[in-house]
Image 1 (cartoon, one colour):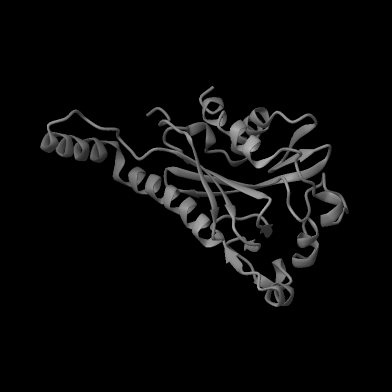
Image 2: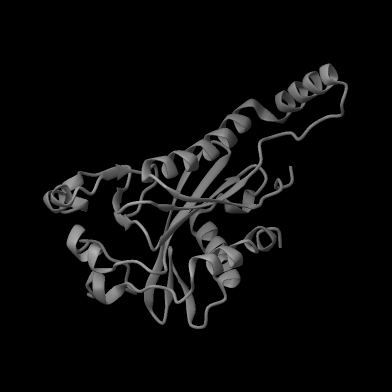
Length: 240
């Protein structure tokens, strides 16, 4: 089965819980389609199109590329682990900043205005080359870096870096037949919030060294509209 058509959907500014829910809905639709199997999907579409008098429709829900921005600061925690190990819980409560769980692994991240969230819900049936986790990160981040086309950009494991400082982090959630690859991209974010809300991680990628959050993170020098314009080229890059 070939990968299905994909185009960018910009959902603008959203409550952070709503943004996470949209990402999971896209993943679960692909998971349900994979569980049904191609024969079941094709049969169902033949019955539906026969009743309507039309031709056979597509065999599965489309893959999706979503972008959105949290309307307020929030801390997103990975799906496992104690909240207190990932965030300064008391500091978050004092500022009225919610703690939310996402369905992927990785570490905690702070989101809010100036931080663009993006997510790819992809079919593993249609893209068997993404079954290997390490290869999938390298391939997807390489193409994302290519369309962003910022001087000095580099792929660093599951991150994108600009002159050796991180501006985008990524995580994945895998289910039967489908992959959610999502990330946060800093472009005009208050980096001091990260220091205030997150402890320094106990496990660090080698390329980070002993740098603090503030020493390690940076904003990419692009406006939101320009980032979205460049990400609109990503679907074409993913079929090469």
